[in-house]
Image (cartoon, rainbow, N blue to C red; front, side, top):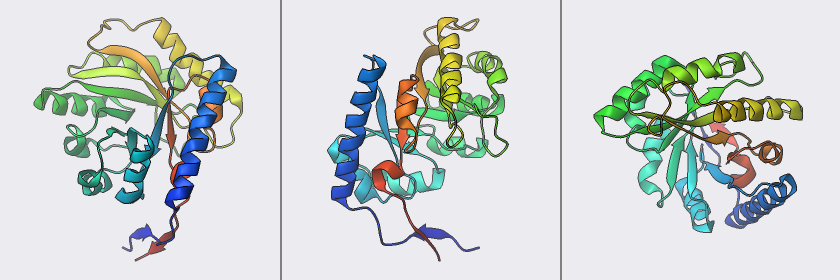
Amino acid sequence: MMEKSLSNTQTSFSDIKESYEQICADIKKVMAEAGRTDEVKLMAVTKTVDTERVNYAIGLGVDLLGENRVQEFLDKREGYKPAEVHFIGGLQTNKVKYIIDKVTMIHSVDSVRLAQEISRRAAQHGKIMDILVEVNIGEEDTKGGISPQSVRELCSEVISLPNIRLRGLMTIPPPWCSEEIFAAMQKLFEDIKAHPLPNSSEDNFKFDTLSMGMSGDYATAIKYGSTIIRIGSGLFGYRKYTNN
């Protein structure tokens, strides 16, 4: 089976710097317009981006990286400058053991089975793993995540597990969707935040994170309460692929 790799035409450092400064300016502008005084974190999504460019972004001020693929992360992590790393991609239970001690949050929890494995592996390392429950807010057949109707039930089951702390929700809204989708996600997040789950405590429930918004829709996501925006192509440019 042929593997895909990056071609040698990638965004220049000056382009990355310009994009970074524009995104930071956009964050401030949209937050001001929305009357927000809290924090929105810019996450650099590093899928297929070489370590040199990731490290350049870290040098500009990026301090949060998002990893989609377990093996790619393991291959690249030793080359990164210091930065916090979250795992944001689909995660198989048999891969949890490879990242459990190397990331500070997992964004893509969409089943009790996955949460149980995260709990088990976290206990082996004597740590509490921060997680987000992934919501398929557009209820698309091609995307991971659970339905909005099932969110509260899954959250309740997750916080019953040891060595896990539920920090909030993550979603990937449908492309070019209406703002009502973002508003629905914000309401779902705020409802759970305002009405804590049964048996929740400071040890297992700190509902402060809404991971929503990517390169094409981060301004709308910020308007509707996102606290982490996940930016890949908007920062590093679109990568071209070649078959090897």
